[in-house]
Amino acid sequence: MKRVRKETERIKREKETIYVMMKMYCHDKHHTKEEMCNSCKQLYEYSIQRIDKCVFGLDKPACEVCPVHCFKKDAKEQIKVVMRYAGPRMTFHHPLMAVMHIYDKILFNLKRPKKKIKN
Ligand code: SF4
Ligand SMILES: [Zn+2]
Image (tube, rainbow, N blue to C red; front, top):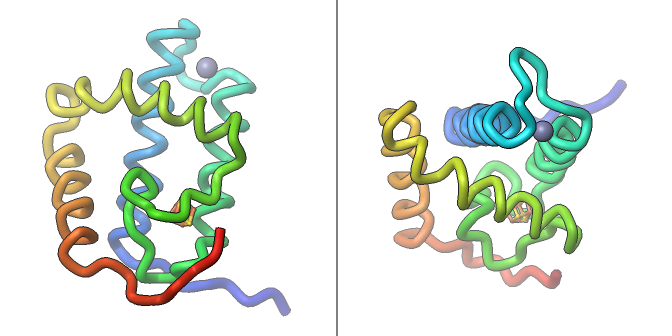
């Protein structure tokens, strides 16, 4: 039987925030409506896979402030482009989510993981 790792509320929130940001980016840049285009969908699914396999487990920081950053190079660049575009717009369209994301980043800085992890 496949073991499913429990998720914290914070991880769920991070996944939801990534989804909303990716949809916003795809909608504005690739002119999609309900569904994301294939390349954005792939990037989104890849990001979720990385989060599910995160070496920090349930204590993972927000990927944005992660000292390891396990994403492969091209995905890392693509996600940065999405974040740069959607980040400032989140404050206007999804203020609560934006505030919680900032809160999560601050929280991570206050309690950085103590484990030494090789990239
Ligand atoms: S970027 Fe960092 S926090 Fe995000 S999934 Fe990879 S190791 Fe975990
Ligand atoms: Zn797209």
